[in-house]
Length: 418
Image (cartoon, rainbow, N blue to C red; front, side, top):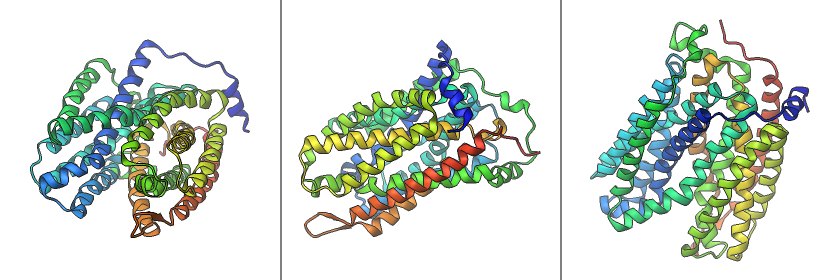
């Protein structure tokens, strides 16, 4: 292991100030809101389709519109992402995201909902990259594992808090209410950020390219940036190969009833809420690459086991899901922490924006590829799921190699292009 990793592992853990704790909570909530807005569409599909009289194909278009809009938005804003105070940039895109979510809650037709999802994706797709840029600016490398650990708990919180509440509100009133409730909570959070968060503008004092196009070009052309982008591509591809069909596989192949699915999500979500911060601390204490290798090994083992399962008890399936998500989080958190060390301060915004775009587009592409690999029989069972699992294994190993190359470059300080 490189000497600088050992030195980081041996150094005493830095403590969060009161302001830093509040900022982490704010950033985690923003991730929670964006993830929840995206994830709400799937469970509400059974209500939205008959309410708006749309076909499954049309609803699929609505869902994918967000991902593709988010991917395009990242590339369009990358050239400008480092030219403004990051707090102002965050509030701008967050305001657009809240407006798009309100539009979703007020939509009365397929066309209106489609446009609303595109608008929400254009703004919401950039928020994650700005959040990561702010976290990188405000926290030194020795603290970023813990920061990413807390931010990543937003995914688990959306599973155990957001989705059940959203489904309840939809059943109690109608499908519009969950989106409107998210708008109300989101407005309160936006006001708190506007009042409490300090400007994040130190990067503006450093030299940057004169043109936005030149800024984007140098972000894309930097060799270690390219390696990072390719590693993000494989990481996202592996994740989205299994996810679209996991529920159908669990119900039809493993014999778990639809009524018991929420139990699996609930227990897995609770477990990952506790695991995220622990993985973050271990990343700072043991070294990010070491934890990433451990997480990848665990993920590969569990993916192979999971995709080859037959009829299985609820307890065993739940345990396998929990361990699998522990592996996934043990990859994602150190991966993001290490990615935060790649770009220079003047390129953090554009670098994260491109990363987010690649992740969104790769996820959509992976889902399409998986749809051609995986087949559903007349009995409802999912076939060739193990082939998708093998694809995850291959992409995971490729990500390990690429991230090892990226980590070697991180030991040399990033230099902004002249």
